[in-house]
Image 1 (spheres, helix red, strand yellow):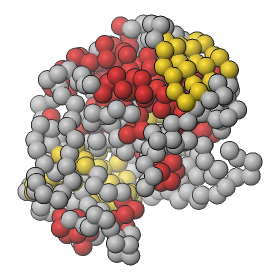
Image 2 (image 1 turned 120 degrees about the vertical axis):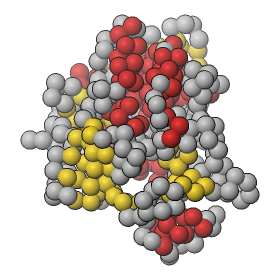
Image 3 (image 1 turned 180 degrees about the vertical axis):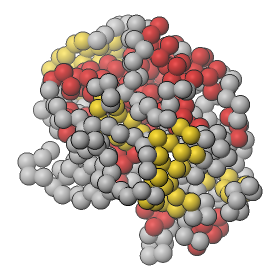
Length: 404
């Protein structure tokens, strides 16, 4: 049986943006009224970036399918000004939790955390991720919506795959973290040997991407309309906008937010590569673009990764080192202990600290708790932790007896 959402043809999906536009299911296709370039780059078999990643993996001896866990979809009119259509994904649910499946999935999760962090992709909450088995029997784990990319990230928590420890949003981040999709298979807690595989895959994938950074940068730079494609900017969470009428927001709504809410939209903002400011559409035809003030009491943007510098950044070292420790802290549990070696990495989990020894001789260590950086992925509830390809549209948060 194929895993898919039980929706009817021509059904509207998701929130309303940009003068009432919604993602719409149309039979075997999904119509998305926004740029599809970023999804096409990562989720299309015809993408030059997918070929670049396959070439890099093959050159490193991993084989061309090392990134074969990414969804592979057919795109229609992906270069249209206001969007196009995407093939409706069809996968079978992943049924097995065998040792081999757990090890493969742990490796995929590690590579995913590295890939999305390195590419600066965000908003990878569990509702945006699918998990299943493809036509070739391969495990598929990845997002269906990619609207934010090339952010200069220093920690994998910034992708939302791992829960950020920000005290204001910690509870929301823990529930929404994308890796919760894999917990029904990896376990609560994950086995130490699988945590080792996950950590080793994360570190080795970051190193691979660093070595092939120029080729990836050249692939982006070759895109003819790169600087005209919107990169979405999230000023607030959707739930804050939904509750704005009942709960006063801080900081107060900007005029551009209030206008969009008044017409029934969830506010939509974006930036353009190498152009200053935060933009939004000013007319229903989406032919006029307005911009928030560059100065004053308005949100400010962080710089994006530089293609001219080959996607190299000072934060890459932090991503490799602090990011690895953050990953371990997210999956840590009091029951995990001892020394574990394999795949070029030795992991020692002691009573008070964790130590990682790399093949190069370098060692990283930290206390067992990194609560200032990341929260645990283990929650007492199991909402979102389902064995379906898609997270159900309505997920009830219930505490399961005996859960972690």
